Image (cartoon, rainbow, N blue to C red):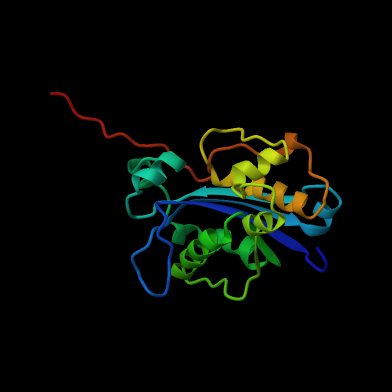
Amino acid sequence: MGSLQRILFVDTETTGLRRPSAASEDHDRVISIGFFDTDASALQAGFCRGKFGYFIFNPQQASAAGARRVHGYSDRILAQQDTFASCADMLFPAFGSADLIVSHNTDFDRPFVESEFAGAGRSLRGKSWHCTMQAERARGGGSASLDASIDRLGIQRQSGRHGALEDAWLAMMLYLAQNGIRLPDQQYRPHCDPMNYRELVRKKVAVS
């Protein structure tokens, strides 16, 4: 890990697969983000020291059917959450201070994260990213999907539904294994709902 001090492991869930690009404003949005802001020297010693965050957002557009099956949130629920922009000031310190940002599919996650922060007036330009999926492909030995990769490590999902926090944790486990570092005890794997989650408010119908 060299001179790295802070490593941020991140995953996103989105409304679909259309990635933001300079060529088009027609793209999907982030509906949740999970991350682990870690001390690199502690990780190298086999300890998970740092903090985690898990947030859900109102993407201000509908999710594609396939994406909704993956993340499990209805458009009605998402419409009652905070927007990414309203949470950007709280999220940016973890991203802005990271020496390296790691995700399992950086070609997917990076443009979404950068676009959401840019829309809130925050720039991640110049940040270094690392993709565990590309690293797994380079190693060979089978599918580089996250599920297949962690299965080879003997790690299983705790939930049948994809969640950004769990996927960020799993990307961290994979990164450590790829770098020959002892994995932290699995009992410390966090499991919680998004920290800013708002329950669906159902309107009461007056009966006369």
